[in-house]
Image (cartoon, rainbow, N blue to C red; front, side):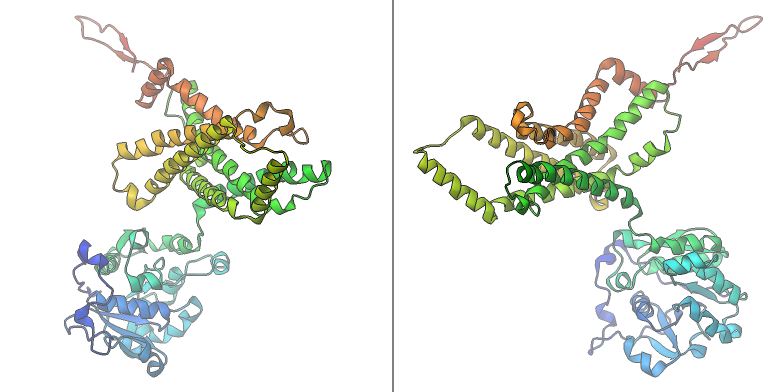
Length: 498
């Protein structure tokens, strides 16, 4: 197999430059011809991905030839720097050929078997979810079975046409590469690096099925947290509906169904956000309790707790999302027509009652403190959400990241608890607040957060904090190491606890 020369990789600073360089642009706005000494690469296919791939390759310093069944029709879709010709001519000179056609069209390329002998075929295709379940072999393995005299490498299937056009950014930069020939993988990896991407060796071609499954996953880490948030929202919404809408209609005949779109939703969102935030720190409390009870850190947590710990980031971001929506809904409350009618009716009642000044000092202070704590809680939660972004998290060292996510996160939970307590004030002790004998909603939301806060407070006690610190540094309950200092005849045993 002949080796394809690869251009030098772009410097980190060049990653942010426009895709089309000025030195490659003609007066008509299309790409100019690449230098004659540029490495030559072939592409089979003339679809959207093939066009974006050809443009990216040309901008990275490669000479590109595209094989099409109808070159005259496809030539106008590619830059001037790309040579568009018949498939037989396109595969004659390049040593690396990208196969940018669908799986069902692979058999149409069998007539090129003799010309493709000894060349590297880069499979960039992706199956649909139904095709992935129907076929037991990957597209790349199927392509390799059709062309046994070629070396097939799976790569670039996780990169979208838009990313190829605009340039790699952060999460879109990684390119999984797998194949049976190390030399072929090295050549394709160097090409990916030259194009500004980060190649990742995924092993042999047997891994292609796993690589092809990557684009089929739709936010896999968000499924359970999202279902949890939706479940909490439905439960709290139904509970608030019974208390705020159904109870007045049944008991007093008042129609309060107008509250469903805004008022009930705004009462539900903070409950969901508050409980989700407490669920971020509850698994840490359970894990610490397990370690204290076991006296070791070397025993694996139960699967449910392990998965819970892994989903804390997503749960925290959903908590911030619900809290932000609650803030927006709260700003919109005075804009409602019903709120204006209530203000007018209250003013009329005050006039009819001959009250010139209505001022309740306790309520004024309660609302001031309530709003202030809410703003502080949302601000702290916003800081947690921002530091969860990879670009921000990568700029922090571990101590800084741990301080924000752990210490400030617990502060956000405490502020949210104070915000909820100030909202409730003395309502939990008023009989009128127990509609249908159901307690106020805020009392239900306080259960889990108060457990977390109390448990965190217990773990700060010296007797527990020191023991937990020793366990996390490797100490185990009941374990001992035996040392035998030398003597004249026989060693004498000494015991030292780890």
